[in-house]
Length: 108
Image (cartoon, rainbow, N blue to C red; front, side, top):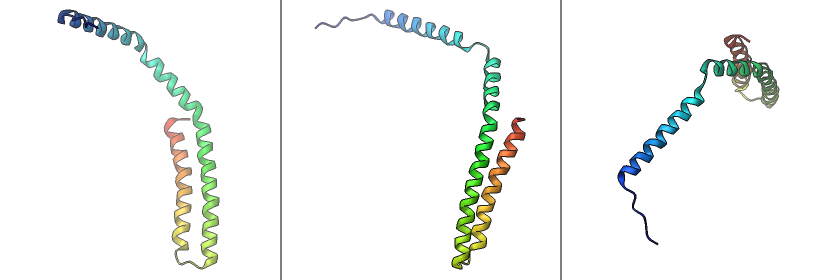
């Protein structure tokens, strides 16, 4: 099998044509950026109430698990019950505050 040698000028010309074609295709795809941003904002706002409810549900589950852990530590007489209770309570408060702050930040 014999290899065909392609001259350097043809290689350069073909790469130039390819890059020019790609540039035109990419420029044609950009369109109106503002419309894309508006569409993304609308989608995020539509999912936000569901995400907030999900964060509240996660906070409730974390609170129940924390309450059970604290109750078990309290019944077994552990000395660090207050520390564990504060940590679990703080995590629940954090989830609720984050959900509320994100709601007000996005204006939903």
